[in-house]
Amino acid sequence: MADADAAMALALTDGRARLTIENRDLGPAVVEHVSVEWPGVSKLPEAGRPNGLRRRRGHLRAANLLVDGKRLDALLAGIALPEGLTRMRLAFEKGRIVVVGGVSAAGRDADFKARIRLSAGIGRRLRINIEDIRVQGVPPIALSAIGAAVLAALGQHLQTEKPSEDGVDLDVLRPALDELMVAEGWRLPDSAHLRLTSAVVSLRGLELAWTEDNAVPTAQPDAAERTSQGYEPPVAAALRRGSAARPRTRGRRPQAGRRLRARQRRGGRGRGAADLHRERGARSACRDRLAAPRRALRPARRPARRGAGADLVRG
Image 1: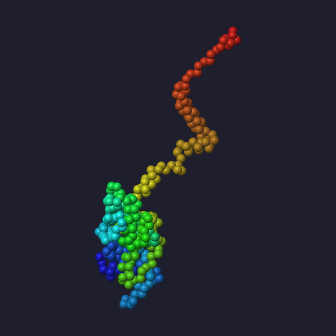
Image 2 (image 1 turned 90 degrees about the vertical axis):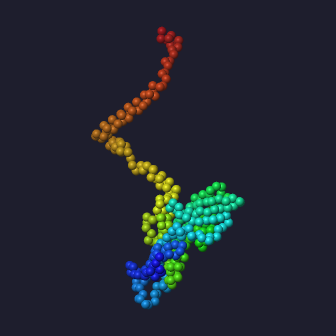
Image 3 (image 1 turned 120 degrees about the vertical axis):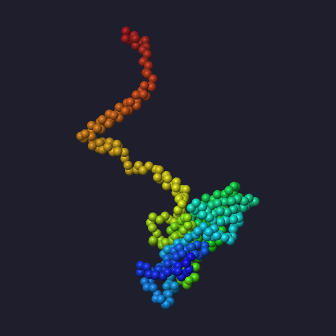
């Protein structure tokens, strides 16, 4: 990786002072790109003079981080496990991040695996949820307790706020900005409008990207988990297949029905009336043919018996 001076550049872009930091290895992650602008500054300090920009607060426009497999595996090194968990580690598997570990309770041990779902949290934070927990054998504790223990361990190790029942928010940009800017004498930039726009698991690893909310493309989803290896949440896939298989007949009418209604609206004028009468006769004949077998199956009516009184009257 390049050193601090080679990876940091200050220049004028579109009439604004912009600080760009690229390809910085911070240990747990690699900062691929960070962009900070000062909208009110249109002139750079002269060479040899103090740089007054270091004391002015800029605006963080964009940031990109990369966490590869080795860094992800070492992320939980030395983690303090809560009661019930015996081991835990993170890994990439089939285009997603999974947590693998073991649980123990009441003299029983079992291995488990769960999927980690990444999404946008509050502000610029990254939200982590535990889903699809699978245990080999009989679970010694409830599945919800396993998920809560994993979230508690992640929150304590990564120094986050108190996790909720189903997720934890991580400010992964704060330690990176402290090392990139504060350690170099720069003031922390304003990131009030910065949002996590993508969390992609690719062949390179976990790629995280932040941009300003007014610069997010309209077609970009709400920072839902996406992968480059074809993974799609099961519920979303089922809804997509159902909508694709549903016939789209709304607003469409059969061609024959439209012709018949047009002839009826003409009300027997000209050639359309003759066609309408022929069609009505054809439908009547079709009904007669369909009703003929049913009439043949009906029992014949027996003739009424003539009484003696009738014969006397007749004679």
